[in-house]
Amino acid sequence: MLAQTAMNGLSIKNVPRLVIGAPQGRSGKTTFTLGLLRAYARQGMTVQPFKKGPDYIDASWHTAAAGCTCRNLDAFFMKKEEICSSLFNQSSGKNITIIEGAMGLYDGLDLQGSSSTAEIAKITRSPVLLVVDMTRITRSIAAIVMGYQHFDPNVHIVGVVLNKVARARHEKMAREAIEEFCKIPVVGAIPKDVNLSIPDRHLGLVTKGEMAETDKLLDYLADVISEHVDLTKVLTLAQSAPELPQFAETYVPNFANFVPKNSALVPKIGIIQDAAFSFYYPENLEALKDMGAEVVPINALLDSQFPGDIDGLYIGGGFPEVFAAELEKNEVLRREIKRVGEMGLPIYAECGGLMYLGRSIQTSSGRFEMVGLLPFDSQMESKPQGHGYTIMEANPGQPWYDEKTVIKGHEFHNSRVINLALDIKFGLTVKRGYGINGHYDGISYKNVFATYNHIHALGCPVWAERMVKLARNYNQTKWSQVEKLARL
Image (cartoon, rainbow, N blue to C red; front, side):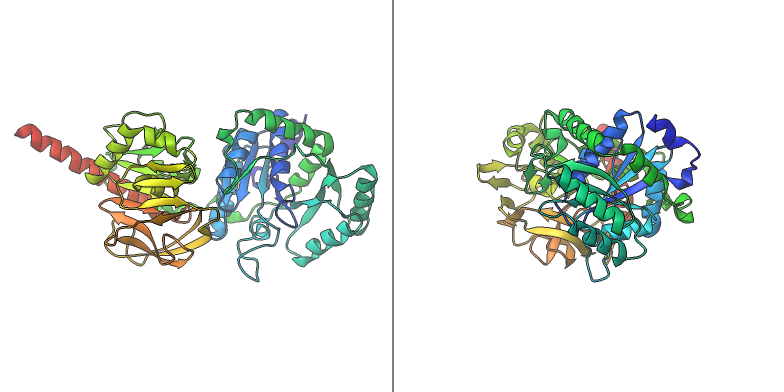
């Protein structure tokens, strides 16, 4: 019934949507969002999830909950046009779009709240549903909600969800106060529940692939939300969203403007995707395909051979330290990656991928051998060694970025590089962030580029263009060498 209601009388431009915000982190945004996504999906609705900010783990859970690939929206390395275009394109044909915020609603990089959840709400003209933690508070919650309503008149808060409600009287007092003084509805009241959580790890939520009972947990969250939240009312609030900005429908991503040379040649780019390496933005993989490449999945834990026809390799981030013993056991694959890297195979590695290309990873459990293509070791620490948005400037003499190119990205790593060779060549100078040593990032060796910095293709379109160009060049060089050998 909800699915049918969602589509009645609505144009694509209207895009029924809500931003899920909160006064602060740890208010219950993620568990509420996951339960909401799964609850709507179980009712036959097509739900498009988005996550504000550079977040791989929450996004993977969103994908599992909704049955639809989650996308990230970020005002630091994405333009307004790119944000609205992504929202428009991915929401087409969907019943509802849910955008989960990060931290507190107005928390940003500066006094103006740059890159905040509120900024995303304003850019996309999306109404906000506020999730509030009711621990040790009753009537005063109305004052908090009212403050959030009036702090920025361009942010439209349309409803409230009460979380961690103690009892019926607690809910009644808070609901009446908010609806009386703030003039917006309370659409749900979720009771205190010790099971309404997902296990933590140093990078945030654990990856959904590691939990054998993922669907059971998501269904449980959906049961709780379905029982304690008015889903019909939430849908009505989403349908109140105004039309997206006009450019959302017509904007073309920058990487689509690149014209591939030698387009008849389809290079094959390997992507190491498994439990150890799972941090990839879907836009990055799509950009490679749009540039004319074929993407080939590789499992560093299970694949015993490296594909012989690969023209490039992309190794994303993840948790190689957790699977270090398994990665070490796959000696054949590690040896092959080192061999092709020495032969000039273009390899781009981010964070966990950087660690994998080094000599070893040292954890509290011991020292584990890695690929050994790059002259350093990685050591795990108890606290983040780099955390937040980054700005890098490309150095001369490396093939991946033109000199002085400014690259916006992000980093979040608990490892640090140790025993680094003195003659190492860095491809990036750190303008904001930490990178490898606070000054530089991006170890450059032959056609290998290994960095702690994560990039998003919409904010760094030249990355995909250069990756495919290097892969094409490698392919042509490889086959020309084969032909020469054949003539001997």
